[in-house]
Image (cartoon, rainbow, N blue to C red; front, side, top):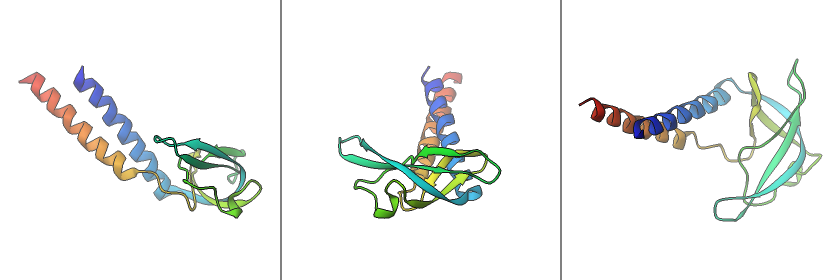
Length: 130
């Protein structure tokens, strides 16, 4: 049971790392319109501001998506609704984005989780087979 749980965590972390890698390597830049700014909260209850952007990739349909990462303070004037910002998007999944000026998501943390969970999975399976 424990091996299966850590195995699932490993797979999820590897998929997350792969998606972030694809975005960084194969991502295309485009100018997007800021549709609105969503105010959320982090784990401590502090405010986080997430821009919701819209753009139309070449040959594709219009995409509207919220940034996966936010900032602890309201965005700059250019990032208010109606403003323009640069977005990097994955051509195979345009809803996977990174908004310029916002913190990059934690690829190193996901990679670390994948390695640790994978190691625990192997250790659990090896313990079962012994």
